[in-house]
Image (cartoon, rainbow, N blue to C red; front, side):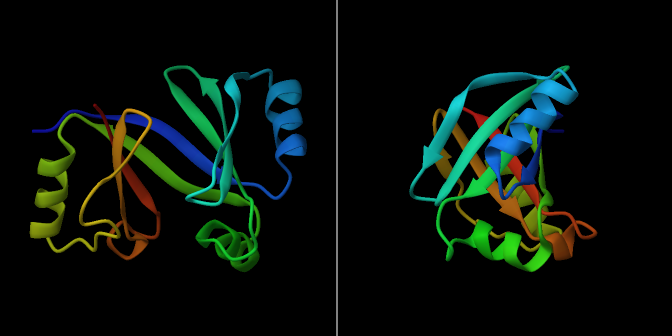
Amino acid sequence: MTDIRLNHLAIVVDDMDAALRFWRESLGLSQTGEIESFPAEAVDIAFLTVDDARIELIQPTTDDSGVAKYLAKRGPGMHHLCLEVSDLDSKLNELSSAGCELINEQPRERDGRRYAFIHPKSTGGVLLELYEKV
């Protein structure tokens, strides 16, 4: 069995500064690092710490990215749940064999981690990211 733990909850925002003010100032959460830009995904991302997990704030940087389309269709709010697994390839194979719809059949890599998304149709309506540190 693969070890699984909560890594982060991702929230799409239309105003990063306003979102950070709320989470840092109103709730007192600590931001981990600076806001990072990811041009390949057309987003800016900021993380805040909550116990052993994090909240990820995602703001699109273009009007035509997947996240921008999501924001335009659904508005700001919960985007996905990220679970950390110890063996991403095994977990993806297990889910695929069980009939789950994988958005990424091959994991993506960034910043010392591998990740893949599972379609909400297979998870009861929640976009799920699986994450493995390398």
